[in-house]
Image 1 (tube, helix red, strand yellow):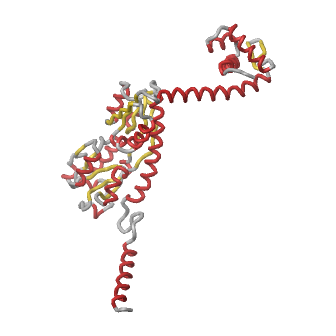
Image 2 (cartoon, rainbow, N blue to C red; image 1 turned 180 degrees about the vertical axis):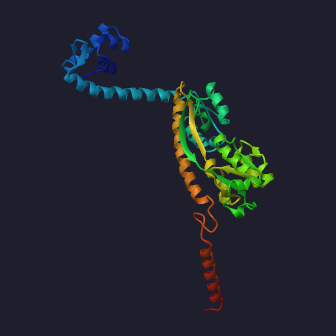
Image 3 (cartoon, helix red, strand yellow; image 1 turned 90 degrees about the vertical axis):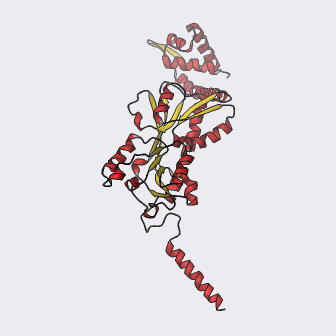
Length: 352
């Protein structure tokens, strides 16, 4: 048997519409041309596939079996066609996407590292802006999608939001900061010092902060501007915190090197400051081949980012005083080993 996928589509169209007239219109043929195509398939199969009834046509028993088999073949052919079109689209062209400051300097950077290596002929433009500016650029068709805080988009009817994992944050201070010895401390304890922020604080997080400030008995701390500084450069922000008494809030992956070296110390955490990001796109704008493929890279990078972040949180999240940090050696064990070492040294000095 030698059938073309085109002929299989004709059979499926007739089975779906139950009428030569409607099926012919659906596949763009005349009724006579569709009839000849069906007759050709029936000659190849050696049995009739359709029978006429009062309302049109319906498949015979042999037709039902044949249709079930060729439906799988046609679906596979369509998947292959889409893959080939996508791959051709990824051999050149452009990709315009956006992200908030945290996503761009973390998971999106990881995704781009792999994407540009695999598709070197695609010109990529990554736009880093705040969420409201990104929405404006999306509606202007300047970007295909963006990754950013989405909690303010609940009333936007023209966008689709694909939520990502919730990422907890920690509050950090330089080593030697007055609050470092008191950790863990509440967010309100930090109001005596300036807070700096990589991005604008979303309303869902800002309201609990404002409420805490209103409850402060320290008039000076309650009157402090929050945040004292906004800067969308992560490296600049870390330098400011390392060189002053300013405090910052961020996912631990953003400051992993500084935590490892001991230059920054995690002093607290608040659930309302967790970051909630999503992939935001227009409902009316399908993704290009490059956009759809980059979304896959982004989701994979986000999964890896979440796994790495969970490990960092377990290690660096501040615990109540007296409870050892994860991976830390208890002080009593250190003292015990030191005492044993000293005893061995005294024995050796006596020649025993």
